[in-house]
Image 1 (cartoon, one colour):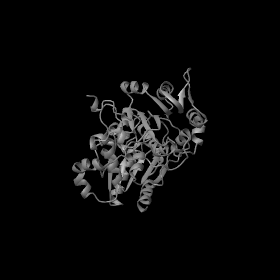
Image 2 (cartoon, helix red, strand yellow; image 1 turned 90 degrees about the vertical axis):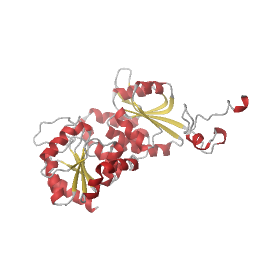
Image 3 (cartoon, helix red, strand yellow; image 1 turned 90 degrees about the horizontal axis):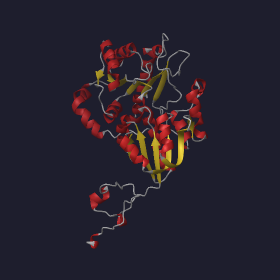
Image 4 (cartoon, one colour; image 1 turned 30 degrees about the vertical axis):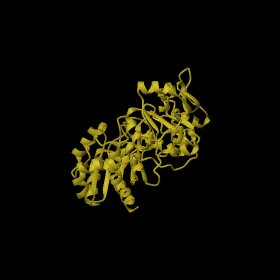
Length: 378
């Protein structure tokens, strides 16, 4: 029995090691650790804690590649809300995406990391950064008396901006640049990882195939979603309704309506208001399917929301309509332009507003059409 090899060496520091079952090289070609040509040792274990909105998760993922350049042999565990897991799992550059669940927290408590990067200012994320085991901590933690603080000077600007409106409005750094500073990375236009959508294309073609073959170009995506938090992040129903007519009548193209499960009421109001209805994608696309559809659009009109960052990841041209949030923090990668209203209180970060007209109401259909035409020429 001893000749079978029960004490065979096992290289548990290899990236391909799984733990409860054979690794892929062993299953495919019978490789064993002592002679395997695919041994890929992990040198640095990084835990990213990013529990915020999916849009912020998407644009933070742009920093994975520069992190790998900074830390050779990097293994990335990313802890997120369950709503972000689909995206993180689909992009393929995260070694271990984990949804925030009691079981996964127990797993993390049993491990040690070389670096913990906590990139949210929430109490939950900051507390996790303090209580999980790591040799180095970056980003934001929580004092014993309940205050959120930066672990070092690189995060102090973000903490200050979170407390003082005048500092937030004065900022001219993009979100990605601010995160680069926190992580100690050189600033740069690092692209947002796009989920592989080859399989997604096969799933949308049977459902939307007849439309995809017949719809006249240009295809203009209208992302009417905005989530539930920011009432004024989304452009007006009347604006979108008039725009769909102009896309048909002036461009000879096809408006395509995108929205998520939380935005069905807004989408229903928009569809009811349209004299020339856009093509309705139904509001239930998966993230890869959404990206597959966006990649086929000639231009996309969207607010400062998840749809913006996925449009950029998919490589489409974009016209971004911005009101209560910071236009300066948006990195468009040279793929489009930002339109803002004419009020004095832009970037107020108020979730609701009684101003009439408000910031989004002062963005005109004519200006959006001109921006679309400019992007189509590019």
